[in-house]
Length: 461
Image (cartoon, rainbow, N blue to C red; front, side):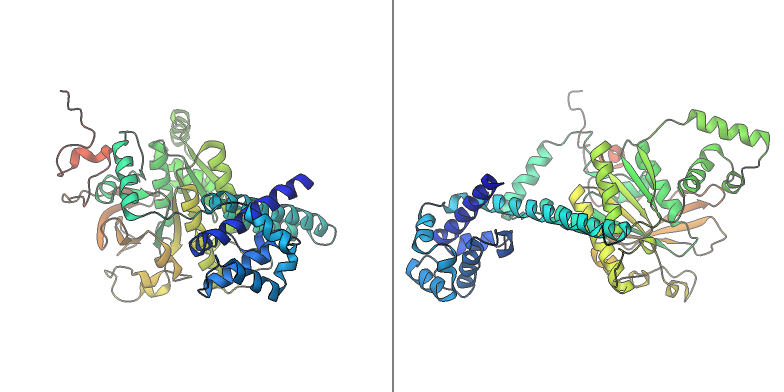
């Protein structure tokens, strides 16, 4: 531990030296990831770093060593770092060229201390508090630490970003999957699939088919070898299995749920199960889970078997952390934003199922839902990359539509005609007039393209 403290102090001195001699530009860069609280509390280098930041914010020249020493003496920082001996250590401490390395070492050491302190505090609390309370507190602390570890400052010139994009295009292969295809051909042809690292919302009124559409989409993705996690917060794994098996066996889902059926129906179920080829779709009973627990199961899935897409069914069922006194609006806003950040961190397509409020039922049956009809929080329409509504003008009829109210990298304001078979809880596309994709489609749909040659066609023939 003593050696660790010495190494940490060396990194802190290096960082302060790089800021002192590198000037305002170095300090601005350091402030993106480091605060005074990241320094060891008893050595004084954090106080010097905070002083340099204040002087820089005030527009003063931090390279004026005489001025810095005068300010340091006035506020007690000079003595805290050891007086003239401390400033002498700065003279050989480090250079601005190594600032990022020093900052990373200081941050990592601060996170290590925070983790140790968290675990020690939680162990003490186990003797005084219920285990459930300690677990909830620990989960919250670990999420904060994990977010700090995964955080980074990605800043490049637009030209550099162009070059990186060009390089990824040059290295693209036919089996690359930059987006996650939904398995609904017209939707994928028109919009290109679901972008990774983004939050995608599917919303509808109760009993209009949110879970069915989400499950159909998840199964379609898994059939294309995408690794999918379906977190069901309302239904059990058994109920989800019944919905999934019904169309495969061509047996009414209600009959499956009752378990009592004719022999020929039982034979169809047995045949469907025997012929089923395993796909990378995992169903998680997430009832009563908090957004931190959802984060945990997603990271476990990603680490164990990989993860391309995650479905959360649905927003209103996400539980609060123990002791959370936020309003419903604040709670659901927090959940939406945490799921969006999780999608970016894991580079997955995050699909969140949501309800529409009662206002969506007012007016004429033919009226499409609007973004203002989203229930719980306005953060949904702000943070979502896409928002898709299920619109059933006549709920008793199979005809329905998917209305794309928001799609950041695709076309919005159009509807895709669909059929919904309530017996088998199955959505399928209706035949529609040809629609032109607004961008080159995924290679799987390139045969439909009007945009010239296929991106990966064989030119040797």
